[in-house]
Image (cartoon, rainbow, N blue to C red; front, top):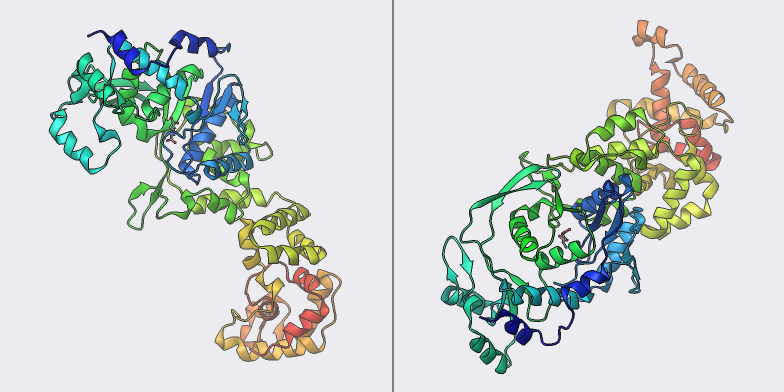
Length: 545
Ligand code: GLU
C-alpha cells in the first residue's frame, strides 16, 4: 500500500507539513521549574465545581512556579450555540480571579503566541497531523457511517467490526487504495481512524504526578481521530494541542485515567514527546447512607458554581475551601498565618491530595464564617449590598435607602470587638438572619409557661420605656423594672433562693429580646433597639403573647 498516495488522496488540500506547523509554535523558552499548564473546558453552559477545581489547581501550579497558564476552549463536540456557554466560563473564571496568560477574548482575539485558543479554529492543524499519520500507515479512512449515525452504527459495528473481546479493529483499516478511491468517487464522506498496533488489552503502566505509578488497560481500538466534518474528538485534539502549545503538565480529572493509554499511544505514533499527567481526584458527596458518590449536576445544586454566587459566598471562602481539598496542609497554614492572603500558600504538584475530597457544606460555611468575621461593618454592608443588587433588587433598594441603619446593623457586635460574632457565612443568609430588622416578628420563641410573666413584664417595661443612649443605661432601666416586678437583680441571690423571685434579670432581658426580635438569641439588644428606633420599639412592645 502506498500510504503517501492514500494521504494525498484524502487530503489534497492540505499543503502544510508538520514542520510548517511546528515552525508556528516554537518551543517555549522557560526554566525547567516553570510549569506550563492549562484549563481546557468544553462549553456546556454551566461551570461544574469539579471543572473549576481543576482550573484552580492549574492556576496554582502555574502561579507557584512562575509559569504559564492558558485557557483553551474545547468546542469541537458542540452541536449548539456556544457563545453563551463560553460567557459563563469566562465570567466564573474572572469573578474568582483565575487569570490566564494566554487565551482568546470573547470577541475572538487571541492573546498569546500559541493560538488559536479555541479548538474549532484549529481544524487545519489537526488535518496536517492526521495526514501525516495516514502517510505513515498509522491511520486510515473509514467510510462506515457509524461515527455519525445512531441505530445503524450498532448494527454496522456488529456486522463489520473485526471485533473480539480483546480488540476492536475497524473493518476499513485494510481497504485497498482502489477501494478507497471508489468510495471517494461515490462522494462518500469519511472519518479518519487510528490504526492501533496493540493486539489486546494487556495492562500498561504509566506515571502520574499526583498518584505515582498507575496501570490501565492498553488501547486496542481503532478510535476516531477526525470525524467526517474534520473535527477531532478529545484524544487527538488533546495530544496535538498540548504538544504544540507547549504544555508541561496536563491537569485533568481522573476520569481520563482509563483512556490515558490511548493518548500515550498517540503521542508515540506522532513521535511527540509524552507530556506529564496530573489526574486530579473528582469531588464526591456523601449520601444519606454514608456512601460516597460523585457530586452530580442532577442531585447537587453545589455542583454548579452558580450556587455559590446565588447564595452570596465570598469568593475567597470557596477558594480557601478548595485549597483545603487540594492540600490538607492549608488548614494549619491558615491557622498560623491568619492575615496572609491565600495566594501566599504554595504547594507542589506531588502534594496534591490523592484522596477523593468530599464536599461538605458545613466545612465551607465554617471557613466562610472565619473570612466574613474579618470584615469591618462597612465592608460587610457593601458586600451585602452588591450581592443584593444582583440577586434581590428589592432588598438592595431597602439597604440603600436606609444605608445608615444597615451599616450600623452590620457594625453591630463586630467593629471594635475582640471576639466579633461569627454567625454569618454568606450574604444570601443575611436577610433571614436579620429578619427582625425588616419587619416585626410574627413568631416568638416564648415558652408557654412564661407567657403570663412575659406579658406582665413587657407591659410594665413599655410604660416606663425611654430610649436609652448606651448599653449601661438600657440595662439599668431594665433592672429597675425587673426589680419592681420581683425579678432578682443579683444572680447570687437568685441562685440561693430562686423561689423568692419571678426569675432572674436574664429572664427579664429574654422577654424583651423575644418581644423585639422573636428570638431567644440575638446580637446585643441595645444595638438592635438603637437601630430600630424609639417608635418601632414601642410598637413592638405593645405585643401581647
Ligand atoms: N474538555 C475536556 C473536559 O472538559 C478537557 C480535559 C482536559 O483538561 O484535558 O473534560
